[in-house]
Amino acid sequence: MTVTRTVTVAGSPVHLLEGGEGPAVLFLHGSGPGTTGAGAWTSTARTLESSFHVVAPDQAGFGRTPLPAGSRGGLDLWTRSAGDLMDALGFESYAVVGHSMGGAVAMALAAARPEQVTRVVAAATMGAPGAGLSPDLDALWAASSDRAGARDMLGRLFLDQSLVTEAAVQARALAIQEGAAAFESLFPPPRARWAEDLTLPPATLAQVRAPVLLVHGAQDRVTPMPAATGPLVEHLPDVRLHVVGECGHALMVEQPEVFRGVLSDFLGGDRET
Image (cartoon, rainbow, N blue to C red; front, side):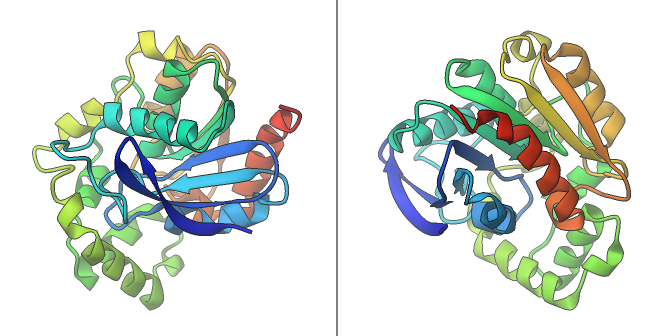
């Protein structure tokens, strides 16, 4: 059974969702305001907990995990923190699943720790050389904490606008408000520099030895598929791409059964590790 708890890693608190039995899988959420580990991954974690040990932290600056003193976030911090967390929890090897920003962190972690990271799933990922900052990602990072801002943000995440319900808007607005103080320092304008910070150069991608599965919504506006996946397919040594039709950026919400099926099949190769 997955539960939420807080652990201390390198002197800083990290809030996480954790539980299940089997090989460890680290889940890393994306960068939208109000995003948390539990918010992004609880539904997915519950379907996997009978076969995998799931760890889904709030990354630094999100949810209940504060930024370390003197830090403003960024790829280096999030990558180092993810590895330090798994060390603190005692896992010698693990797969990593990342969404959007979390995908970039997952690939960077695999490059930095090739002996520990066994597989990578990068969903609707950032990190591709040359991808830049899309207008929808720029707007998402700038979302206001009122209901209008939350509605606009959700509208950009989904192809199916029927998912932008009043309940979803209210929940997202509250989540944005709760995390506003920390998030304000993460992606201030001009925001193209923060997209660049999350870009992995070809030399880093070439160091990713673990098998990588890219999963991408065909109608993703936040990280449009051609720019987001093309360079990764070119530069990752061991990569495959699964395109999900009729789907925007938030695959695990918009096409949950497809996403979980693809995820389970790919991670299943680690069940003996």
